[in-house]
Length: 208
Image (cartoon, helix red, strand yellow):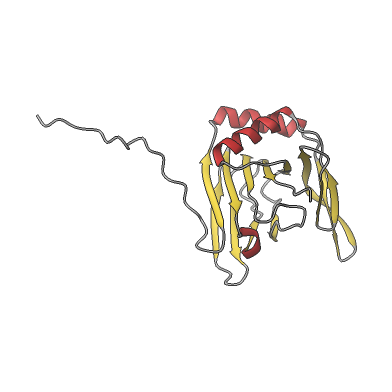
């Protein structure tokens, strides 16, 4: 009988590849925690984050969104986007635990987090780039999804080429390098999703 041999590499995890064809780096790590752990953090954050409706000033009009947000950080960083400014709250224990997990998984470091709450699929985000002057130039932004799975899109600013990925419950996506300079991203609304999604976007504020 021929003896069957096992490759030393049978248990190797597939390498993390860049989802973008050019002009930036987007890495999808898939699920970085088991279902029970993801459920635990989803419920913890849903109930304990200081959620408030997001604000934007567009053509002089002050707008409040159904989507809710909260801003946390190492210190009282100010973060300005959509012509409004937020000051960071002190970290919650659960956010620090998730920040550590994200940093260990990605090899990146972060000093702040913008949390987003989408109550269902009808809430989303339009095309935009996270290129605010407060952020570290070409720094990494980590997007951790908890709750409902949603489709996430990228569109190149010049060629308009598009790339999409389904962001799973407990999954991690990293955007870095020139991504924000050359690509926009969006979370399109959908009537198919009836449940909530908590999205943590870990970032690095440049204090200078």
